Image (cartoon, helix red, strand yellow):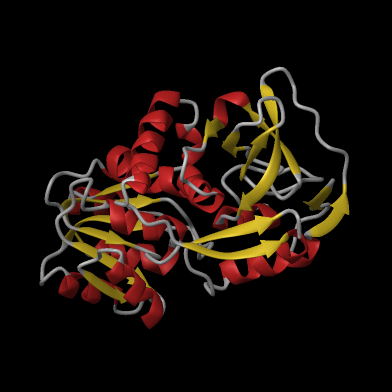
Length: 317
């Protein structure tokens, strides 16, 4: 089968298109013929081995696939951790979910990792209360575009989006944000407060880390929460305990793979997300589709913030 493999860590050039044997599923796994694979910002961290979990080589990257189960012929979306950039992938049976009628592959992939993240950062990590103000970083991206739409249905009051270009901020407004501001760190605290009509905010969803995290944290009200679900800047932060005490603010983290060991939480969220899509209440923004041979360019575009929405790989190309 055609697959993208890494035999060393490094830049996009380490993503090699190779021919590999079709993987053989174990007792608790299923084999999926991949029709589309999803790209995530975490893939770029795995490539350089600075992700949350340590990586091993050789490795076929890609944490999620949509396709057809070889044993049943059922259309599914599956969370695979590794192996997605290929024509075939093995997935734990417990992390393989039927795709409802009327939902295309790209939509299903967006809901699998990024939709689950967007849903649970509000419900599980931030514990969003009715009427609270929310700031969503990288609001035109995969997680951000879904979080922008989910914020109000899940209880938010004023919804503020941040993005890096006029076009992306316009998209965030189309998706339901009350205000969209420049996400650059310089002056970000002041822009957030101004966008919230002069008041500090209750919840921030941060995917950048570094200076953006610091500026966002400074915009929180007492008892405000900042949820970290990405570190796109690759800059770590070290909040001081005294600062937390003095401001009554909370720093929370969310990593999707801790959720996967709690099937009830996954099932509830996916059912809600698929239902919203089928009822026309949730718009999934699907961006570009690349061939396997273009995986390096796809990661460059993703890391360079030249994309919007969910990026896909087509293993037939």
